Length: 179
Image 1: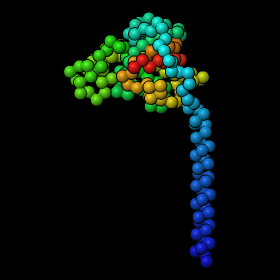
Image 2 (image 1 turned 135 degrees about the vertical axis):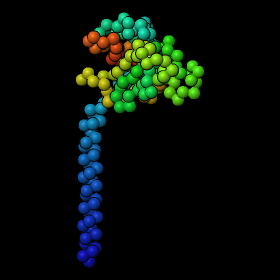
Image 3 (image 1 turned 90 degrees about the vertical axis):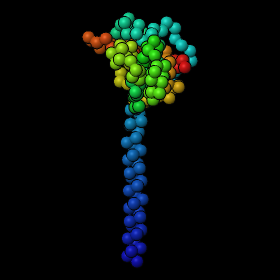
């Protein structure tokens, strides 16, 4: 009888513990889900925005805080799409991907490993989608609206430059996935 009572009490304890743990996980998940937010439903455009500059030209002409439209290819590094942030690297379309070079067997042709790193750096920029607090949304762009490495994009947004830097960041408000 004691074993039976012990088994019932133990089973009850396990059941209550699992409910409490599940409840805690759900509660912990709620703020995180709200904090991570989602990508804006209208982020993906159905047609290209006019007046797009190539990445190299945008890097040359863009002024901090001004609207910009830029076109390029998702690439420039092995992982051009951040897995848990709305950040991507966009490369100038004039850069030949490694599948178009003698290194045709390259597993990641979008990283431009067949070109000198200085050339790649001079022909890439960063795209990010930010939330109301100005930080990148905590959701990856990969797969959203067809965004993937090697896809050509037209991005509309605001140009951002760090003081004393030649790098360019575009805070995107619309993205068109060309192909």
